[in-house]
Image (cartoon, rainbow, N blue to C red; front, side, top):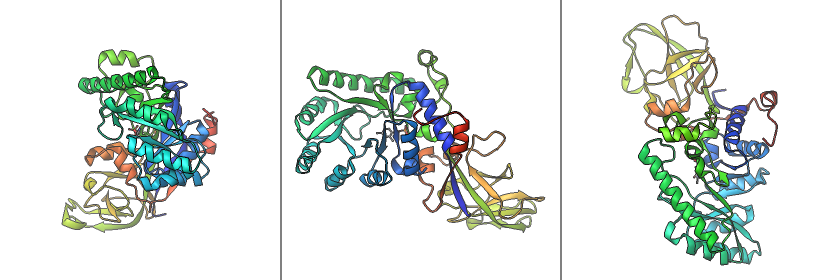
Length: 399
Ligand SMILES: *Cc1c(COP(=O)(O)O)cnc(C)c1O
């Protein structure tokens, strides 16, 4: 195979289990938007459903419809604002939209009434993220409006954090301020006799750093895919103390990107490799041409700044990464043979020097989210180590 992204199911389940251990009985919503951050939404959704996730989170109506076609039957929350012309599909697929304003609430109510179908919805409150959700001062009146819509069922109330993944003291204070605003609105709703439904706020950062934000449900995405947004140990002393009642969370990268050595070529000292001639061989050497390029999602910015692991040893990538191919310097003496596999990122395997997508994000000035999301669909996802390893580890469905 030219290239593939191996998705280690057992690692995903271990990460899920780590969150489960930390949050106790709190419900878990698994964000599977953007094709489960590039890991393949249908598979991740099925595994999550089996592992006891309460619901899933998606960004587009089409993503939700696809999951329903795949037989997913737990609630699916629609995190982003859909277009009004998608409302029939929301009702048909039984998705749970977030409501930020009266106009959309009213449109949903009308169409739900026409279909004689009571629609579950969540109220979304913007407490400082500055994205979707109503302003806090409008939250109570919007809650009242939704509550009065006979065809809408308010089953949840949510907010989203802007800097919960930072242990900086000012950022911690900002998250606490968001929490205070959120708590105030929820209290006001209850005082007004409105049932807020399931209250939820925490993304990965807040699962790690802010136990007081877990409420009835947490929504960690990145952590479940194996990357930590923040280390507990980075927290200031009073926070570290609060977190010390928990075992440190361990994340294991779920995706491993592999390609193949498609050709090995001897080149002489002074000869250059690839476009722009950005690398010139300092000595006679062997170059492995690897079948992976920026179209596959290997950032071109990683040129001359990354590695490929072949037979357990790391070799530097040299020359510009091209659309479909990149190059590893195997050195003057090599016993690497053609068609060997090369690991571009992965990590978490004892003894294997492969780095993870978070390290690749660091060297290319981005975040691990963007790296895994950008692995192109032309790279097949291969799911491994489910039945055997998972059962061996003693996990069972319904963790
Ligand atoms: C993406 C998303 C999450 C998950 O965020 P992570 O940083 O991946 O944990 C949670 N909630 C909402 C509304 C989101 O859009």
